[in-house]
Length: 117
Length: 506
Ligand SMILES: Cc1cc2nc3c(=O)[nH]c(=O)nc-3n(C[C@H](O)[C@H](O)[C@H](O)COP(=O)(O)OP(=O)(O)OC[C@H]3O[C@@H](n4cnc5c(N)ncnc54)[C@H](O)[C@@H]3O)c2cc1C
Image (cartoon, rainbow over all chains, first blue to last red):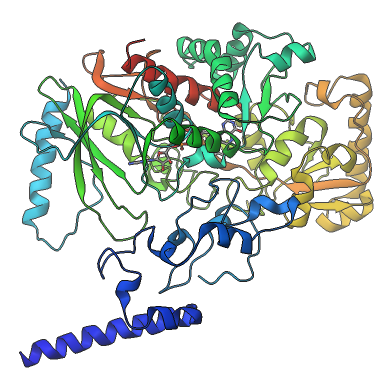
């Protein structure tokens, strides 16, 4: 039992440090997520969150508005882009626990100054 | 049937995997199995694997002919495959725009152009089938809402201008409307769903598929595998394998990881492989095409590719070390890619050649501004400035441009025999726009053998494998050695439509 507690403690510590890390990438998530990993991990803690998970709080249309570009570059909007419209799941470009490149960088040299992993 | 022994052997291997230890979480190996006694998790009318041109066109056509329960499965999180990042160039003979522009063209003429670039090993029957139905496919895109530039283009290896291009200069100008049309007519679409193998009936017929749900490409998270029964059949539209470095190097050792690739990450070929294991005939796998219009200054297809495709007919490509031309700028792809690859220094390191255009002519293409803005191309006010920037010998370059401008006047290219029709009145003069050229692995001519009904042929019996259809880049042999630009969209769409018609018995 004692061993079990230690292991449990270690596991929790691990999880906490993960969530700290996630809060580091996006500090504004700290309050919402707190220590409850399940806020995002709706498929179970060890699984990636579902594609709908982020959409509990974020609205695609709002995001598209926020990242809109000028008429000439309108299709470079990551949240409403030429190739996939508004249908790219968030996890393709974003991650809470590590930094990621935006999907566009596979082929383009666009800059997304505010992109955080 | 050829597959029976293979299946037995694979079961044995799979068994070994389990015995070796439970720690091995679901290896990526695809495995087909006998359907005998499997528990079906789901039963649908038509299974389509892959969501590019071929898969989307098949879904729409099947629905048009009365299918009620069509499902598209896509392993990536987003839909569209190579088709969604494609250049949007669509060749068809006898189109309304050709009539308007007075271009004489025919099915025969398009097939002949393709046979030439196929260098004797293209499949004339399939080419003819595709060319004969290309206008119908174009119409399907128009019906779904695709829009095209108001002019035709003449691409390398084509004897006339027969190529439409979407107004966004990208295949997404087709996949987005087709995808929306699929949604509108009730096609079921599933992302993160990876095809893992066939379920095969007693007579060797395909009766269903094993599909991994909640699959995250490139991540270590295997989802659950479902057995899905396909009442009418399965259409494989999984595209090419240009992103599978091992596989392409096995065919052509020069195509190492160092050679760039224009394809979407999902072009890894396991769908094709599983068909081979089942007995499909591999055709022309070693003919892998590189795009001679790509740039080493950006990833994938980027902005430069379409920019160059548009500009090559009225521009010159010169070697950086001599300032001289080294190829016919609109020869077929293989000819040009090989010529470009020969641009190297004494140590054998690449010295990518330059494509020089007059700004006045290049700016007609919407990508020109972007190419300059995103630092993958340059604008120069004078030849001196250009030559200094790239360290090209000025005298040689000057002489070359003067010589070439002579050909523009006479309409005859004495250096490389380039068709000067689209270069008419387009002198090379300042200001200039320049991009660097270097080939990237682009298209797999090889794949499984199909007939003009999109049925997959079995290697041993020579007959079609019942219940199995394939369309698009996953099929091989159609184009032979080298596919002409803008000829994949018509192929994918026509063969997708054909597979649907075969399934629906029309
Ligand atoms: C950058 C680029 C530009 C091009 N430009 C042109 C052009 O202008 N004109 C032209 O004619 N041709 C062009 N081509 C070629 C053409 O785009 C492709 O040949 C065509 O898109 C292939 O379509 P498809 O439907 O066969 O496959 P794809 O569009 O590649 O679709 C296949 C789909 O299957 C999915 N898939 C693969 N394996 C599995 C699996 N195991 N389970 C589930 N899903 C799977 C893939 O993720 C992919 O989404 C271009 C190609 C590229 C890469």
